[in-house]
Image 1 (spheres, rainbow, N blue to C red):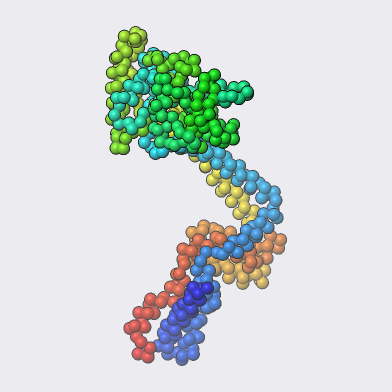
Image 2 (image 1 turned 60 degrees about the horizontal axis):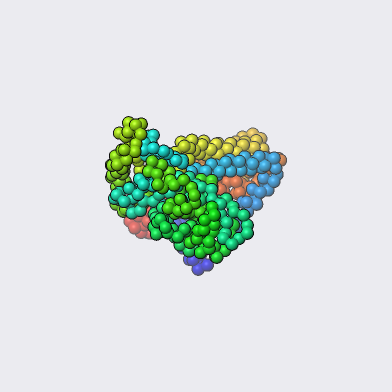
Length: 499
């Protein structure tokens, strides 16, 4: 309140200063004091109107005015239900389609794994492969590795803080809580190296995660359960952590629960519910993949050291691959030996994990997103054009009437000229402004649709939003347009009154 009173007092003082400067000019021109002030006030214009303009420009439109506009818009929409339903359904369809496409684009192209510093992660391979590859040669690139080759990379590659391996696919595991009479349920599981969670830089929601000690031959069988399964199937029972579960009829101790937003290393529809150490694979009676150096079934992701150059690490791993293959020369087939010179590998950013969907659909999703956005713009423009045409047809050509055209009732000509002049004034003296033809359209739609009569109230609600941006841009400029205060000030310094 105090601030408003100060603003009003400053406004009154500034207006009085403008009028006094003009009156001084009139005195020097030979007018009497009373006539000088009267002429100065006439030249300045309506004082109260100037005050209202200043108050309107002093801040953004009030909440009450916004609610009033919304109520008025609602009344107009209720009067045209068919048009309103068409617009709402069209916009809903366009917005819904755009939102759906963007959600898909975000999940496939933009989303990173819910891990610490995903930009530091690099994966082996340009393309994802599933799920096993036999032999000592691979087409185009080595993107899957055997457990023996993983250990070779892990122990000899410099530049990685951690290099982790994990199964390129999931295995269906029969799981039953020890001591429960219920039948075993099938859940997806994944074999991972002991440093898997350390490499991702995540912490357990409850209990602990796997460590290198769990991924050793002869270590007590341990497993980590997903947060989703723990919450949905076991209702966040804290006794699950530390409990024994029979996985394929072998007892495993659940040592911890993954974080809520962690769903594994791969974008897939069935993320793993159990994470098991790689060295427990033989315990479950599966084929002993970890003992077969020519059976590639593991993906690799590593976290590089700060300042490490991924290109240098890639070159080093290529040399190590050749070295490892030469050590298996006696086990190679004739075809593997013939393809030995072409064997290579690539490192690529791994913040999004191992995903084939990104490479496969990236180009088409980008095109689909652009097309959908363009269609939404067309829908919005079409709806706006329909609204303008509808209101314009109902209102008639008010601007022509306001400038003297035939067909305008005499009683309406004055108010129309007044508001058309106001529109031209705000638009810089022309019928166009930064709001386009909005003021013109506002005058057209402000006529009563039944008899063409003009309404001050309606033009306020229609022209107000159209002129809001212009008024905000011209804030504080109206005094300079009215009196040229700088010129008056200069003259008052050079020629005092009565000189």
